[in-house]
Length: 325
Ligand code: F6P
Image (cartoon, rainbow, N blue to C red; front, side, top):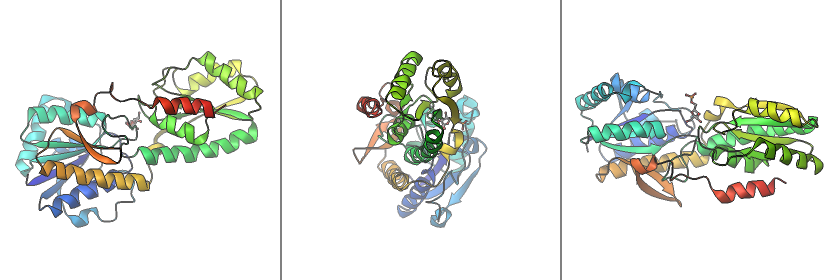
């Protein structure tokens, strides 16, 4: 390969900037030319690309968001959109593409590289949702979980002061990864996860037992993908049966996506960016670089997207319940 392009796509995630820096500098170290694409696949279709140098990525390790900007791009799902994107890359002389993003990004990347195999494609898992098979952690998950923990600790202060029950909704789309880790870290009384159905009646029973056991406040974390509905719906149902607590709801929302990346995400971003470029140089394509047992591992994009392979840890779910009595 001789010229590499890099883009970030889908929801931004803290750690994307350290990864962009790593991709650019590893490529330059290996005498490759690099172009950055703005706003993900949207910029690819609109030919919004610019040359990047070692200094283009100075002082960005500590920045949340993505200096390349990002978008969720519908036209890239069409054959016409893909063809324009391909022609734009050819015009620039690009023969390798690093895409940093989540499942939507990889779905597009896989389709694109099957259609146009002369452009090598490497995926880097960048999403706060931690929902890709082939990497124990995705970029941004650690920072987002820490952000959630900081917020819930503050809510616990006021919940305890008023003897209240809080339902706190966290992001993750169909994954309960943030909810589970945050729940363990904050001692949530219950964690409602898409991966494990909780009947509202059981939740009410659990909260009543907590009250009998002299719990002064309760925190229930609701993953946004939980099948019982959103935190407001669940809170309403529970309030009817649980009179001893005043019930409140907090939806943490997009604050979970922002902020300076944690040490873990800075290092993960650096490692994955470095590995992505090295894998492309070795001739790999249609793969995702991930981290498993602290080692870099390549997984096919197809496998990475296979949600059936991705599982939330059973032992953590069980432990969370036992520790919250
Ligand atoms: O995939 C990351 C994520 O933050 C999900 O957790 C959430 O469901 C979604 O993106 C929100 O998307 P948007 O920012 O487009 O509203």
